[in-house]
Length: 254
Image (cartoon, rainbow, N blue to C red):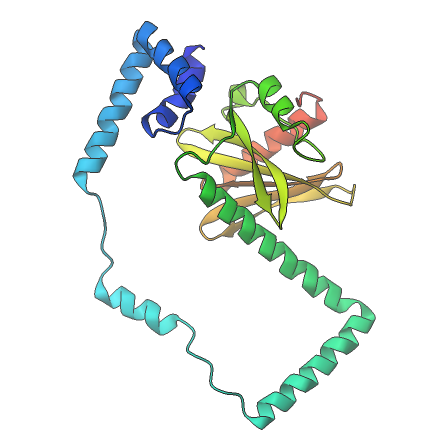
């Protein structure tokens, strides 16, 4: 293990996220490297200061009242006229279905649901011990780990030189099926790249949306759907996606 690899895993060591083997590797590196030892000491002191500072913020009562006012009110029991309007709407939807327009609506709803699911998966991964099933900065270690676990293994690219450090991968579940998640780090920000097989081989240009405070860069290429999720700023997440796609075109994927 070198300094660069150890630096990626120091935070995981402090947070108790490493298994026994990787913890020993990092501790051995720290024991023999003054630079890594100093970094670990700084990180621990920083964590201690933050914990002791009790940096919590209590929202004012007025904000609570505004939120409660903005929440949807309980629905009243529908009267006869409302029920009839519902039947009329149902007939209209049936007519739209005959023209295929309702399929567009359903696809949009489905996309929103999946985006919500990938954000939930991203949040789950940030809990202690959930970020990675395989920890490595080597794409040739992470890529083979997925073999046999999924119908299609996700491409794994080392983007460390471009400022996005590969730290591992894991299996996750989105849309009621197992998919691969390749994990990167940009400074203190985690990027989960979820990859799933799709029936279409057409390329879908990338777009970025914000869901529940997280940015999602979604694109499709070569029969795979990609969702890069992070709290990174949109421009940095776009940079990550651009560099990943460029590396794919250049044939440097693991």
